[in-house]
Each structure stands twice: as structure tokens, then as C-alpha cells.
Picture 1 (tube, one colour):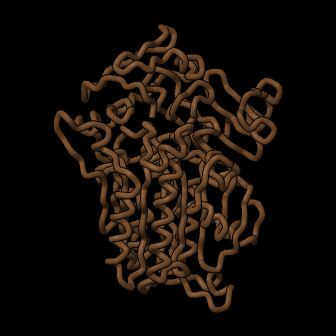
Picture 2 (cartoon, rainbow, N blue to C red; picture 1 turned 90 degrees about the horizontal axis):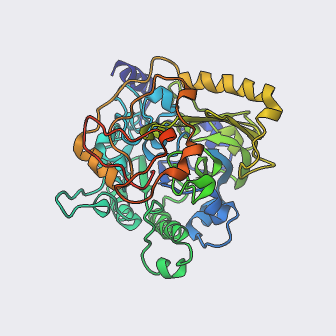
Picture 3 (tube, helix red, strand yellow; picture 1 turned 90 degrees about the vertical axis):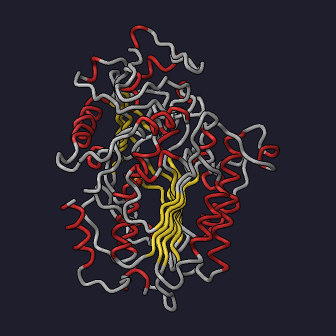
Length: 479
């Protein structure tokens, strides 16, 4: 708690209601400073299934409009292929080893950490969050700093199932647009989370018919229609030129790549490369091809509003967006500890320029410019580079050593609901054995049965261990 209070007090020093940085907004004569920030997070949305990233088999007018009017980051990377760790990094600017949330069923974010919402709220912003899955429910740690945090209207009882613990994008946007009408002339921070692209893929009509050949893309198209509704609401309220809009994916979807149907286990580009688009007053449209990270979003927003930033693992992207710099020389750390739930080795990855290292029992190194689908492992041929990247990855994985403070645990009811959505429940048991003592997930993924309630493992690939906290059967969807 003391850490958070010190940061919030620092943010208050010298503040009025909202202070705007002249160096950013006053560069274009006649531009009014922004009074609002909207963050839209797209769950389970891989960048290469969006028209703004070159996918031709879908119409996405909402995102296409934002791309025309803003900055598109072509190489944005998430920290983990799981919803809660990714969002926690987005809103704290910290890597998972430093904020302590490593899994959807892990402990909630501790209130010792400071969120973007807390910093903006301390500056007088009205804050509202509207999320669409129990994975991001109010008890999972991200409610900190929000005046209103609207999650799923949970339904309990024998009939309750996955549909009761998630909601469609139109319901989220109904609440979000209604909340906009309550903020008046106050500065505001609005977060909307759209879960639609998450399996099972079941878009409403007419998207089901239009995209019957690819229902995953149909879900994205439906979510995009609701983004369009929100943009129209901003237009109608005179907020178009006074609001920063950021769209970010939390992680992608494997769609069968490397043998994984969904996401959660592997750290290949199909789950790590995510969309990131920023539209802001006085910001010229552009495309940035350099590596950026979800951890960079928070310091970027804070600089745009001239709010002092706490120490984070990210950096501001303002100079990239306005063209002052062409390259920040960033590296991107990612991890998945989820395989430990299956008795497999955790995976960690480091992207540095065109090279990407995956630390696994059988390590992998890829040139993702020449080999974007990561089929040709060049680890043995570039051993010196691989060993250097491995050392750097190990340092990042160790974290700062002092900020990973456990928050509230996951109660049995929430564990059961997570299992219904396809996540193995219970707190993951951190293996003390070395990496090589556990099987490599790429050797085991094909042995995982997709039959509900009947996971099958090769003996060499570990086995399922029920948790002590809840008798939750393993589920077929690794998400």
C-alpha cells in the first residue's frame, strides 16, 4: 500500500485538475488539448486477422477509420497469451515478473501497485471500466482507480455456464456510451473490453452468415461494429477532437498454428503479435514498424497528459508517434507459465530486432523477418547470439525482486467459472525443478485430448494434478 500511496502523492504534486503538456499539443495551432482517453481492448485478437494489418477477408470499418486517422503499430507485442496478465501489464506498465500476475487463475493484482486509472483519477479524471468476462471481474485487481467498474452480471445456479460469465460487445458498449453521458465537462478515462473473439466463436447475425466460413473473423467483425458505435458516440458529443482513442489486443489466437488450437501455452507470434492503434488530436496518421510493447501504453498516455509516471518496464511512444524518433531500440519480453498446470515446462520469449528467442527445454531462435511463421529454428547456427539473448531473457524473468506482491487469491467459485471458460483452475504450482526437468510443451501439445473432462497425457508429458483449493476438472480449451 505504501508504494502505491507514494506514487499517487507524487502524481498530485503541482497538479490542478488536468495539466496538458505544451510540447505535445501546442505544436499544431488551433488544436485544443484532449480531455478524454478511451482504451478499447480486444481479447484474443491476432493482428494478422485485421484488415488494417493486411487481412483482406474481412470488413472492419471502425478499426479502418482509426487506422486512417491515427498511428498503427505493426509490431506490437504482448507479455503473455493470457487475458489477466496481459491487461495487468497494460495498465501498470510492468512485466508479469514485476507485478506478480502470471496466470488468469493467479492471485489478483496487489493494491501495492499503481494503475493508470489511479493516476488519472488522482488528476481529477472520471474513470469508468466496462469489461465482458469474469476473467477481468472486479475481484481480479484492475478495479483500482475506477469510479465505476462494470463486469459481467454473473448468474449462479445449475444452469449457469460460460454464457453467464461473459457478455457481447453490444452490451458493453451500451453501458459505456451511457456512462459517457454522466461525465459532463470532466476529463475522463473510459476502458471497454471486448471478449467476443474468444472461443466458442458464435457471432450474432448477420455476421454469422457473412463469415460462416470463418466465425473467428466474424466475431472480430461484430466487435468492430461496436467500436464504430463508440466512435459515433464520441462524434455526436463533440468529443472527436478532444479524446485520445487507443485500441490494443491483449493476445492473439493460435488457430491451429504449431499444433495449438487456441492460446495459453505457446509464445509464437500468432499469440504474441497484437494490434495497437492510437488516434489523438494533432497526431498525424502514420505506421510504425518498430517493436513496441503493451507495457509502453501506460507511460505513453501519461506523457500525453503530462502526468508524472512511476517507474515502469515500458517507455513512452510519443516520439515514435510524432516522428521525432524512428527507432527506440526496444526489446520485448513475453512468458507463459500456464504449461505448468499441465506438468510441462514454462516458456519465455525475447524479441530483439528481427530475432526472437524462445527459452524452452529445447530452445528456439527465429529470424521473424525471414521466417514470420517460425518454422526454421536457427538456434544451433547462431549459438553466440542465442546465448546472449538467453542471458538477457533470464535477467528479465527474474524481475526487480521486490515488486511482485501477492494480491487476493482466487476463491473456489471463481476457479469453477474460469474452468467453464476453458482455463484450468487453482493457483499454479511454481516448479522448483530446473527447466530441463519438465517436458517441452511442443513435444506434448498433440497428446492433449480435446474431449471434455478426459485430458489424456503421454506419460513423458507429465500429468494433471487437481488443485487443493477446488475440485475443478481440466477442460478442453487452453485459454
